Image: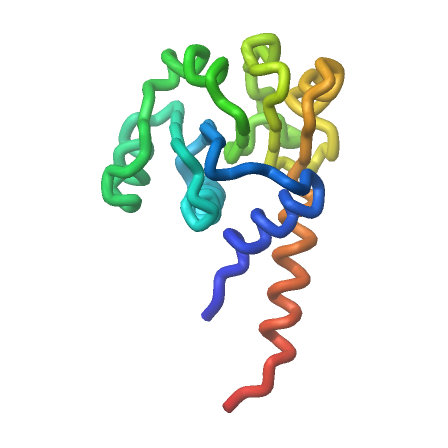
Length: 163
């Protein structure tokens, strides 16, 4: 089988926000599920300077850190505000903000003035996180580019002839 999550995320991100200098980026990942694994893998492949991750569940946070051989900067949920203020790119990999779920309660005024904000939620297309970050003039991307690029990559894989 093939997994298009990481490549779909990165190609979708670069289609939405080109010319990101990943080697100079501090990335902040919110959430420790399957989507965050794909995002982390894709950021590592782009040689991101530092990856910090937080999650509401400490157990899931430790599990994902082990999966990446302890190379992630893990912080408790309650300590996320300090790291958010130092991040160049902030990526919500949780379902918070998705239609029918609670909102992700984060103060975008903590973000750097040139931060990039990515919310992998695509329903609704404009979550409160994206709306608030856009109103602040930050570059934003929702989950739709990842979804579309994943689909395109999956389709390409399906069309490959079987040996």
